[in-house]
Image (spheres, chains in turn orange, green):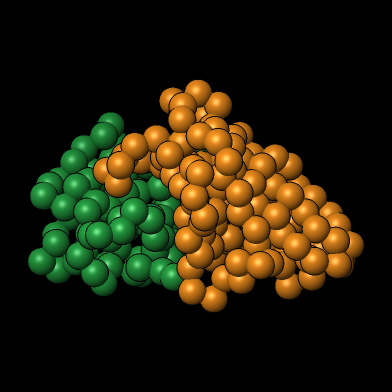
Length: 116
Length: 111
């Protein structure tokens, strides 16, 4: 099946620094990518939807200036957590879809972010 | 945002037994999907059922969809210890392209 690669798998950073997470579709062109956030033992909360070449659409309550999303190519989307704080510590997961709404999503393996 | 809820929140069974998880959602949908997540890992797609379908099978999995009740169920037959994971339903709402997840069911299958 299709592969989505997400890096890094885990990152520890100091409060106030920025962290970039990459999500790549390795063997297909991802017209749409989604970024989710997951707290321990909870479900996935959609943060934003990005389409290649256009601005991301953020969910209500997600600060677009804090969580910068770039989807510059059909195979790469990045999420940058700017000026990270301990409350941003979470598991971030990207997913990608090659076609329309009736196509399944392929998920990256996730990034565990810990902000000290 | 979350679309709906799943029940039970947690399910503990013995190997060989069947496991049934239910999902309810709130709005009209294009399709409903079920995913599996092992602890601390990414998600794996299990099955997709479209709004005009009522039942689908894939191996030991059986999914039903009742759009009049806005509900779906996932049945895992003859469960195995390796089926231990969290299972999430997710919906693509009519008119949108995003996939919104339910609250999830944590399944524990004991040998």
